[in-house]
Amino acid sequence: MIKPVQVLGQPAMWLRAPDGAEVTVLLHGGQLVSWIPAGDQERLYLSPDAVAGPGQAVRGGIPVVFPQFAKNGPLPSHGFARDRIWQWVEGADRGGVMIGVLRLVDDDATRSIWPHRFEAELSFSFSGLQLDVELAITNQGEAPFDFTAALHSYLRIDDLRRARLAGLYGVRYFDKVSGLTQPQELDPLGFAGEIDRIYYHAHEIHKAPLSLSTAMGRMMISSGGFNDVVVWNPGPAKAAAMADLPDDDWLRMLCVEAAAIGQPLTLAPGQQWVARQGFEV
Image (cartoon, rainbow, N blue to C red):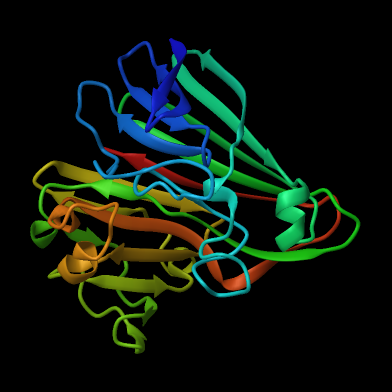
């Protein structure tokens, strides 16, 4: 079943698989904002104070970061894909697996700040206890361009202080809080508050999925084409300063992002790059 709905006052699509699994995706940002596996509970975090609209990024779900990660360049933080309206291309039931496809292409507004022709396609598929999200970027212009990208996934948890993330042992990371670069020495990783780390080449070092354990159960997080992993939570002080996040909701979410940011990607004219992130509970 597929039907148009409204989320945060914006157009969205709601999809339900025959087994009862559900996904909701905003056209604003091409952003998944809800995933309820079959017979399970909500697994994506969406802030109750989130807002959506022109030029606004939605706090939660799976924002698409493109063509720039964070403030590492001249563009707005995390680029522009997450605050543009994407086109709904297709939704279908393929043998009990629901799929959805959205597309974003360059226009006068994007070319005024990033002078390249591109097509971004976000596709997702889900059924049962699994969700797979794929991002494809195609160079539609006549000259090569560089970019970075990520799926900034907000995962819903019960209490950050009791969460454990396994699978990053030995991976070197840059800690944006301390400014240090060092290898991950503890596995699983626990949390006490703010964390902002980029784990470089994580999926070249460890091929196995990451494992996030909480009182809600265990979630396996896989990826392909994204070499890096970002682990982020604002902690209590920064959460209190965010207008679109309740003060205590830093306890109820953890971002485990699939990213390609350590080494910018280059696409020649007509070339396409494809990467994915998958979840299973």
